Structure formats: structure tokens, C-alpha cells
Amino acid sequence: MICFDNSTAHTDSNNNNNQCDLPENYKELVTTGKVEKLILSPSSSLDRPKTLPPKSQEEVLKHQREYEEIQRKAKKTLEREAKEKEKLDAIRKEKERSLIDARKVWEEDIIPVWEKNSKKRDIKKIKDLSWRGLPPAVRGKIWRLCIGNDLRVTDELFNIFLGHANNAYNKTTSPPLKSSLSSSSKSPNINIDLRQANNSIHHSRSPMNTSTDGEDDVLDLETTNMALILQDIQDTFPSLMIFQKGGPLHSDLIDVLGAYICYRPDIGYVPGMTFLAAMFLLNMEKCDAFLSLSNHINSVCFLPFFRQDQSGIPKYLAAMDSTVEALTPPLHKHFKEIGISAKNYLVDWITTLFSKALPLDVATRIWDLVFIEGEIFIYRTALSILRYFISDLIQATYDECIDLFNKLPQRKISEDKLFEEIQSIVLDQRKFDKLLEK
Image (cartoon, rainbow, N blue to C red; front, side, top):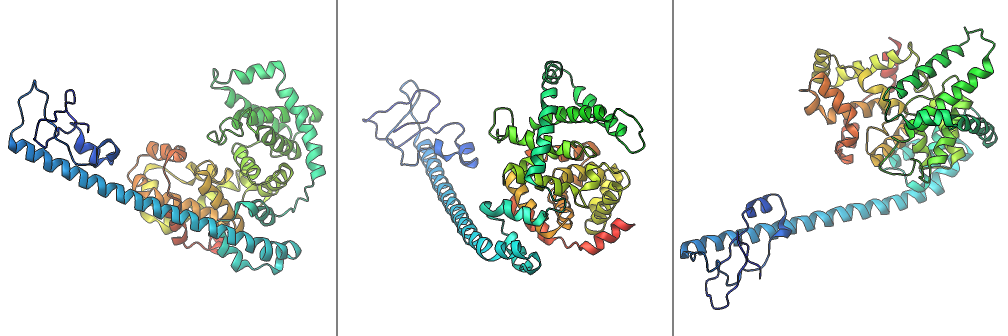
């Protein structure tokens, strides 16, 4: 038996006092739950080292009671932890069983009908099942069905623009530009310089420009966009370590984004696209990811943000501010006082579809419901995030709010609590559309 003491542990079988010195921080060990550092068995006949005076009978009894109390609390803590673990295991197993059952329903009852005639699909059943989370095995297919293919993107089209992208990639990684990119960590302005060049080239490609150097402009645009992509990939789901250089999906992500910027030079690369393409690649093959990305960005509610439409974006931001004012007045009042508005958070959330701001598993469920429920779910989610952190936001300064928005990925977010918040928000698409018309 070990005796906790400030000096060397000592045992003496001839000593009949049932005593044991406790560690100085024994109370802290109990209150912080670090019970594994305590011994959960009766103390043996131990006393102080012979160099110290013996304990009085009163001390012996006091320490014995304290030790027994520690044992009681430690045992209670271990029992509680065991029950919590058992409960979590049961929930996990139930979710797994539910997903297995749901997969069968999706594959046998819903998807075949949807693929044959989308008008005959059971929308109520689809929405009910989607709120539980889509089974990973069918998620990619469901997303593709929801997004559709109004642009009529084909594998052949993807391969054509992938060829253009390879040319841009080869030029981007040539020695002069490679040198510039590799020095980005030393030069904090390279990101700004590249984006300014990107904007300049976009301007030169506008319908008002009559330059005869169109082909050179296109190649410059593709090369500049490719450089931006290569930079931003490094910060795309870094904890997964699958999209960065050397990762299994690094080249696929470059291919999808490279093909896209060549396919849509009028849009080019916009920060946030790496997260979108990465999310699609986590759930489907490369060609399908390109198809889904292209059609997703082209949808009515997303295109203004990727075209950086200065007449369209303000309408969505104003509608979001009005929604916060109507459904969470105290927060809107505080935001107005400190100068915070939707422009400080919504653009990033929309261009990445929350995949940068939220944990991956939570963001994936958000994507499920955005595609099933429609664009209104974006604004329900945005408002729910504000409400989730309302106790912090409502007393924060402008800088503290911005810091919270920027550091959301580091925040702990309970999936269940966030979705409870989302479900509590009643937001009608028709009313939101009227806000957009103002």
C-alpha cells in the first residue's frame, strides 16, 4: 500500500495505527475528477517517517475520515462516469442502428422514385429522415439529387476544363511563381497582392473592356486563381490532413477547383470555395464534386456572393439583419450599438456553407438540411449560431464579436443543442423573400 506524504513513503508492520498522510492536493484531485490518482481501498497501517513526531489520535481519526470521504466521492464519480459512458454508448449504437435502417429506406423507397420522377418523391418522408442525418453511404447521391444539374455539366466537360487547369497549374508551379508562393510565409502581403491581381484581371474581362488581349487575360486569370487555390488549400480542414500537399485528396481538390475556374472565368476563385469543393469530395467522386460545385454556386441564393454582386449581396445582408431584429431583438439592439451587422459574419458562412465555422460533423448535417429544406435553412442556422452564443455576444465589444466569429472553429459546439435551437426558430421562406424585395 502506498502512503501519500510530503516525504518518503514508509511502512512499518509493527505499527498498529491505521493512518495515512494524504497528498497535499487531494481535495483538488476530487473536485476536478482526477480520482485515478487516488487509491480506492482502505488505508493500511502506516505512519509518518521516524524522523517526524507521531500523529495524535485526533489527527489519525481526522485523516481517516477525510480519506474515507475521498473514497466515497471517488467511487461516486467513477459510477457517474460509467453511467454516462454507458448512456453515450447506447445513444451511439442507437444512431448507428437508425442510420442502417434509414439507409435501407433511402436506397429502396426514396432514391429510385426520385431518380425516376422527382415530382413523385415523398417530400414529407424525405424531410423527416433528413433531420436525423443522412446515412454517409447515400449522402453524396442525395446531395446531387437535391442540387440537380441545370447547367448540364458532364464528365466530358469536366475533363476538357481539367486540361485547361493543368496548363494553369504548370505555369503556376514554374520556378518564378513557385518561388513567390513558397515565400508567402515571409511576405504577408502576397495574399493581398494575388487577390488584387485577380480583381484587376476580372475587370479586364468585363463586357465593357475592348482589349484584344483576351487570350492572355484568360491565362493570367487562370494562373492567378490557381495560385490563390494552392494557398487556401493549406488552411482547408487542416486537422484532417487529407487535402494538404501529400494528402490523399490534395490533387483531387486542385483538379475540381482548377477545372471550375477555367469553366467559369467570370466568377474565378473566391475564398471559401476550397471548403465547398472539399466537402463535396468527402462525399462523392471527383467528377460528381465538380458537377455539384458548379450547380451549387450557380443557384440563385449563392451566385451573388460568388460574383461579388454589390447590388445583390446587400439585400441578403439587410434581410438577415431584419430577421435578427424580429426574432432576437435584444441582440440586434446590442449589435446596432456596437456597429455589428450581418456583413461581419454572413458572407463567410454562406460562401463556405458553415463548413469553416462549425465542426465537420455538425456542418455536414447542416448541408443535408440546406439541400433538403432550401435556402431558408441557411438563415435559420445563422440565427441559431448567434443565439447559441448570445450570452457572449450580447455583452461583447465590436472587437470581441469579430474575434468570436473568427474563432468559431475553436469553440465547443454541442450538435444536439444547436439543432434544438434551429428547430425552435420559425422562419418562413415567403416572408424572407419579401425582406429581399425591400
